[in-house]
Image (cartoon, rainbow, N blue to C red):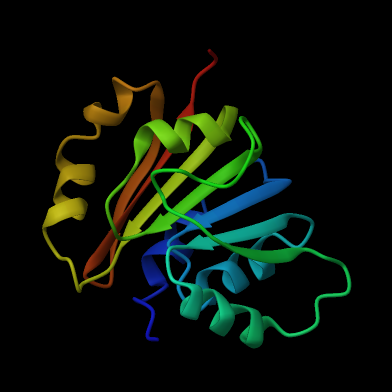
Length: 162
């Protein structure tokens, strides 16, 4: 399973502060983004969720033995994430349709949302995030940074208090 370019995810991750204790990648595929986040935030526990059992099995195989338990994967839908309320400090998604209500449910107040899209979807999500991030503001997010890189783009926002 091929993953989209991680460059927009990496560019957005440079602006994540403070570093998360718990992070989630939605639509993790074969786990490439989860592994990147684990390297970028070495103190964090990183989780990946994907609809595909096959993708999750591939991700687990790629990670191999994780004696510290920092990385784990689950099969699950972005519309019904298999995690408790307010569990994550950072939720990342590389492409795909956002289930904002579910993201808000699992994200702690003050937590960060990092959405990245690569050149394979050059207009849909990227243009919406860059041209009109106010649709996320209406859901309680304050824009931290919006950027473009390598034909893709990213949005980083912080969820306000509830």
